[in-house]
Amino acid sequence: MQIDLFKDPAVYKDLNRLLAQVETRAFHLSCSKEDLQNICNGDADFYRELEEIIDKPRVYKQVYGCSYDSHFLLEALGVGTDCKRYTVIVDLSDKLDYVLHRLTGCPSEKIRAIPNYLNISRSLLSLDYAALTEVKLGDFLSIDDSIVEWMSNLIDNIVTESNLCDTEILNLLLLRFIRAIIQEANRIKSYIIMYLRLHHSAVVRSKSVSSILATVSEDIETDCVLLESARPDVEQCSLQIYKLQKYEFFTGGAYNVFNWLYKG
Image 1 (tube, one colour):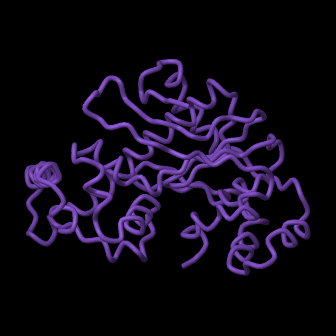
Image 2: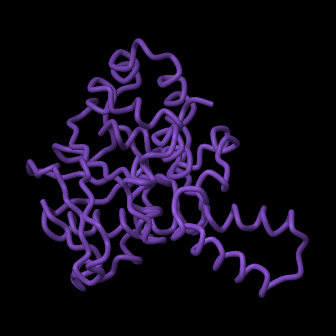
Protein backbone atom coordinates (compact mmCIF):
# COMPACT_ATOMS: atom_id res chain seq x y z
CA MET A 1 0.00 0.00 0.00
CA GLN A 2 1.37 3.39 -1.04
CA ILE A 3 0.18 6.57 0.67
CA ASP A 4 0.95 9.97 -0.83
CA LEU A 5 0.95 12.15 2.26
CA PHE A 6 -1.19 15.29 2.40
CA LYS A 7 -2.25 15.00 -1.25
CA ASP A 8 -5.91 13.96 -1.19
CA PRO A 9 -8.43 16.61 -0.06
CA ALA A 10 -10.96 13.83 0.55
CA VAL A 11 -8.69 12.47 3.29
CA TYR A 12 -8.43 15.91 4.85
CA LYS A 13 -12.18 16.49 4.77
CA ASP A 14 -13.51 16.70 8.32
CA LEU A 15 -10.21 15.31 9.68
CA ASN A 16 -10.05 17.59 12.70
CA ARG A 17 -13.75 17.19 13.52
CA LEU A 18 -13.73 13.40 13.22
CA LEU A 19 -10.55 12.91 15.22
CA ALA A 20 -11.94 15.20 17.91
CA GLN A 21 -15.13 13.12 18.02
CA VAL A 22 -13.07 10.05 18.91
CA GLU A 23 -12.22 11.70 22.22
CA THR A 24 -15.87 12.02 23.22
CA ARG A 25 -16.71 8.30 23.08
CA ALA A 26 -17.02 6.28 26.27
CA PHE A 27 -15.31 2.89 26.52
CA HIS A 28 -17.36 -0.25 27.22
CA LEU A 29 -15.76 -3.66 27.69
CA SER A 30 -17.03 -6.40 25.39
CA CYS A 31 -15.67 -9.33 27.43
CA SER A 32 -15.58 -10.28 31.09
CA LYS A 33 -12.74 -9.20 33.35
CA GLU A 34 -12.07 -12.89 34.04
CA ASP A 35 -11.56 -13.60 30.33
CA LEU A 36 -9.20 -10.66 30.07
CA GLN A 37 -7.21 -11.81 33.09
CA ASN A 38 -6.92 -15.35 31.72
CA ILE A 39 -5.70 -14.09 28.35
CA CYS A 40 -3.13 -11.74 29.88
CA ASN A 41 -1.92 -14.24 32.47
CA GLY A 42 1.86 -14.23 32.49
CA ASP A 43 2.60 -10.51 32.50
CA ALA A 44 1.69 -8.98 35.84
CA ASP A 45 2.79 -5.46 34.86
CA PHE A 46 0.56 -5.45 31.82
CA TYR A 47 -2.53 -6.80 33.55
CA ARG A 48 -1.98 -4.47 36.51
CA GLU A 49 -2.22 -1.53 34.11
CA LEU A 50 -5.46 -2.91 32.70
CA GLU A 51 -6.86 -3.25 36.20
CA GLU A 52 -6.03 0.40 36.87
CA ILE A 53 -8.16 1.64 33.98
CA ILE A 54 -10.80 -1.00 33.32
CA ASP A 55 -13.43 0.45 35.69
CA LYS A 56 -12.56 4.09 35.13
CA PRO A 57 -14.02 6.41 32.50
CA ARG A 58 -11.93 7.10 29.44
CA VAL A 59 -9.87 10.29 29.72
CA TYR A 60 -8.00 12.13 27.00
CA LYS A 61 -5.11 14.42 27.81
CA GLN A 62 -3.06 16.66 25.56
CA VAL A 63 0.62 17.37 25.14
CA TYR A 64 2.03 19.65 22.43
CA GLY A 65 -1.43 19.66 20.86
CA CYS A 66 -1.45 15.86 20.57
CA SER A 67 -4.20 13.92 22.37
CA TYR A 68 -3.65 10.58 24.08
CA ASP A 69 -6.16 8.10 25.48
CA SER A 70 -6.10 6.51 28.94
CA HIS A 71 -7.73 3.38 27.43
CA PHE A 72 -5.42 2.87 24.45
CA LEU A 73 -4.26 -0.54 25.70
CA LEU A 74 -7.81 -1.86 26.00
CA GLU A 75 -8.64 -0.61 22.52
CA ALA A 76 -5.46 -2.24 21.18
CA LEU A 77 -6.65 -5.55 22.62
CA GLY A 78 -9.85 -5.22 20.61
CA VAL A 79 -12.06 -5.64 23.69
CA GLY A 80 -14.25 -2.57 23.27
CA THR A 81 -17.85 -2.87 22.16
CA ASP A 82 -18.46 -2.60 18.41
CA CYS A 83 -14.88 -3.51 17.49
CA LYS A 84 -14.66 -5.03 14.03
CA ARG A 85 -12.65 -8.09 13.02
CA TYR A 86 -9.25 -6.37 13.01
CA THR A 87 -7.62 -3.64 15.03
CA VAL A 88 -5.07 -1.67 13.01
CA ILE A 89 -2.42 0.45 14.71
CA VAL A 90 -0.31 3.05 12.95
CA ASP A 91 2.74 3.48 15.17
CA LEU A 92 5.58 5.92 14.45
CA SER A 93 7.59 5.31 17.62
CA ASP A 94 10.61 3.99 15.69
CA LYS A 95 10.38 6.56 12.86
CA LEU A 96 12.36 9.44 14.36
CA ASP A 97 14.66 9.22 11.34
CA TYR A 98 11.79 9.94 8.95
CA VAL A 99 10.17 12.63 11.08
CA LEU A 100 13.43 14.50 11.65
CA HIS A 101 14.35 14.09 7.97
CA ARG A 102 11.07 15.77 7.03
CA LEU A 103 11.76 18.65 9.42
CA THR A 104 15.43 19.22 8.64
CA GLY A 105 16.31 17.57 5.33
CA CYS A 106 18.93 15.41 7.04
CA PRO A 107 19.21 11.99 5.35
CA SER A 108 17.36 9.45 7.44
CA GLU A 109 20.22 6.96 7.31
CA LYS A 110 22.45 9.43 9.18
CA ILE A 111 19.85 9.75 11.93
CA ARG A 112 19.44 5.97 12.20
CA ALA A 113 23.21 5.67 12.64
CA ILE A 114 23.27 7.46 16.01
CA PRO A 115 24.09 5.19 18.97
CA ASN A 116 21.05 3.68 20.70
CA TYR A 117 18.81 4.97 17.90
CA LEU A 118 15.79 2.76 18.58
CA ASN A 119 15.57 3.65 22.27
CA ILE A 120 16.02 7.35 21.54
CA SER A 121 13.35 7.24 18.83
CA ARG A 122 10.82 5.48 21.04
CA SER A 123 11.61 7.73 23.99
CA LEU A 124 11.08 10.93 22.02
CA LEU A 125 8.06 9.91 19.99
CA SER A 126 6.22 8.33 22.91
CA LEU A 127 7.36 11.01 25.39
CA ASP A 128 8.83 8.45 27.76
CA TYR A 129 10.07 11.10 30.17
CA ALA A 130 12.17 8.73 32.27
CA ALA A 131 14.18 7.70 29.22
CA LEU A 132 14.28 11.24 27.84
CA THR A 133 16.78 12.22 30.52
CA GLU A 134 19.34 10.44 28.33
CA VAL A 135 18.52 12.52 25.23
CA LYS A 136 21.06 15.27 24.56
CA LEU A 137 20.66 17.94 21.89
CA GLY A 138 24.37 17.77 21.21
CA ASP A 139 23.96 14.22 19.95
CA PHE A 140 21.71 15.53 17.18
CA LEU A 141 23.82 18.57 16.34
CA SER A 142 26.73 16.28 15.50
CA ILE A 143 24.72 14.29 12.92
CA ASP A 144 24.55 16.76 10.03
CA ASP A 145 24.77 20.47 9.23
CA SER A 146 21.11 20.47 8.16
CA ILE A 147 20.09 19.75 11.77
CA VAL A 148 22.44 22.47 13.02
CA GLU A 149 20.80 24.96 10.64
CA TRP A 150 17.29 23.91 11.68
CA MET A 151 18.10 24.22 15.39
CA SER A 152 19.79 27.57 14.77
CA ASN A 153 16.51 28.81 13.31
CA LEU A 154 14.69 27.57 16.42
CA ILE A 155 17.15 29.46 18.61
CA ASP A 156 16.77 32.63 16.52
CA ASN A 157 13.01 32.47 16.98
CA ILE A 158 13.39 32.02 20.75
CA VAL A 159 15.80 34.95 21.06
CA THR A 160 13.52 37.16 18.97
CA GLU A 161 10.49 36.31 21.10
CA SER A 162 11.96 36.70 24.57
CA ASN A 163 14.76 37.99 26.77
CA LEU A 164 16.15 34.82 28.34
CA CYS A 165 19.49 33.73 29.70
CA ASP A 166 21.49 31.01 27.91
CA THR A 167 20.24 28.21 30.19
CA GLU A 168 16.62 29.23 29.67
CA ILE A 169 17.17 29.38 25.90
CA LEU A 170 18.60 25.85 25.88
CA ASN A 171 15.71 24.52 27.97
CA LEU A 172 13.19 26.14 25.65
CA LEU A 173 15.10 24.85 22.63
CA LEU A 174 14.76 21.28 23.93
CA LEU A 175 11.01 21.75 24.43
CA ARG A 176 10.55 23.15 20.93
CA PHE A 177 12.72 20.40 19.46
CA ILE A 178 10.48 17.78 21.06
CA ARG A 179 7.30 19.68 20.19
CA ALA A 180 8.23 19.89 16.50
CA ILE A 181 8.87 16.14 16.37
CA ILE A 182 5.64 15.23 18.18
CA GLN A 183 3.51 17.55 16.06
CA GLU A 184 4.97 16.37 12.75
CA ALA A 185 4.49 12.72 13.75
CA ASN A 186 0.92 13.51 14.76
CA ARG A 187 0.27 15.11 11.38
CA ILE A 188 1.59 12.03 9.58
CA LYS A 189 -0.26 9.41 11.60
CA SER A 190 -3.53 11.36 11.45
CA TYR A 191 -3.39 11.49 7.66
CA ILE A 192 -2.59 7.77 7.42
CA ILE A 193 -5.51 6.71 9.62
CA MET A 194 -7.90 9.00 7.75
CA TYR A 195 -6.63 7.48 4.48
CA LEU A 196 -7.55 4.06 5.88
CA ARG A 197 -10.94 5.45 6.88
CA LEU A 198 -11.58 6.67 3.34
CA HIS A 199 -10.32 3.61 1.46
CA HIS A 200 -10.96 0.77 3.92
CA SER A 201 -13.87 2.04 6.06
CA ALA A 202 -11.67 2.11 9.15
CA VAL A 203 -13.31 3.43 12.31
CA VAL A 204 -10.87 5.42 14.43
CA ARG A 205 -11.09 4.39 18.09
CA SER A 206 -8.07 5.61 20.05
CA LYS A 207 -4.93 7.72 20.04
CA SER A 208 -1.62 7.72 21.87
CA VAL A 209 1.26 10.16 21.43
CA SER A 210 3.09 8.05 18.84
CA SER A 211 0.22 5.90 17.57
CA ILE A 212 -3.34 5.93 16.33
CA LEU A 213 -5.72 3.00 16.26
CA ALA A 214 -8.76 2.00 14.22
CA THR A 215 -10.90 -1.06 13.60
CA VAL A 216 -11.70 -2.62 10.20
CA SER A 217 -13.77 -5.52 8.92
CA GLU A 218 -11.66 -6.37 5.89
CA ASP A 219 -8.19 -7.83 5.59
CA ILE A 220 -5.97 -4.89 4.61
CA GLU A 221 -2.41 -4.69 3.35
CA THR A 222 -0.01 -3.83 6.16
CA ASP A 223 3.20 -3.12 4.22
CA CYS A 224 2.98 0.61 3.65
CA VAL A 225 5.21 3.06 1.76
CA LEU A 226 4.91 6.74 2.62
CA LEU A 227 5.83 9.38 0.08
CA GLU A 228 4.96 13.00 -0.57
CA SER A 229 4.81 13.82 -4.26
CA ALA A 230 4.45 17.54 -3.51
CA ARG A 231 7.89 17.42 -1.88
CA PRO A 232 10.14 15.32 -4.15
CA ASP A 233 13.11 16.02 -1.87
CA VAL A 234 11.46 14.00 0.92
CA GLU A 235 12.53 10.37 1.11
CA GLN A 236 10.09 7.50 0.98
CA CYS A 237 9.50 5.62 4.21
CA SER A 238 8.52 1.99 4.77
CA LEU A 239 6.00 1.50 7.54
CA GLN A 240 4.58 -1.72 8.94
CA ILE A 241 1.00 -1.29 10.10
CA TYR A 242 -0.14 -3.58 12.89
CA LYS A 243 -3.21 -5.66 12.01
CA LEU A 244 -4.46 -7.61 15.00
CA GLN A 245 -7.41 -9.78 15.91
CA LYS A 246 -9.01 -9.72 19.36
CA TYR A 247 -6.42 -10.23 22.14
CA GLU A 248 -3.58 -10.54 19.59
CA PHE A 249 -2.02 -7.29 20.80
CA PHE A 250 -1.02 -9.33 23.87
CA THR A 251 -0.85 -12.91 22.60
CA GLY A 252 1.18 -11.92 19.54
CA GLY A 253 3.63 -9.85 21.59
CA ALA A 254 2.94 -6.46 20.00
CA TYR A 255 2.29 -5.00 23.45
CA ASN A 256 6.03 -5.15 24.14
CA VAL A 257 6.57 -2.35 21.61
CA PHE A 258 4.19 -0.18 23.63
CA ASN A 259 5.50 -1.05 27.09
CA TRP A 260 6.25 2.62 27.84
CA LEU A 261 2.49 2.87 28.41
CA TYR A 262 2.54 0.64 31.46
CA LYS A 263 6.12 0.22 32.70
CA GLY A 264 7.53 3.04 34.74
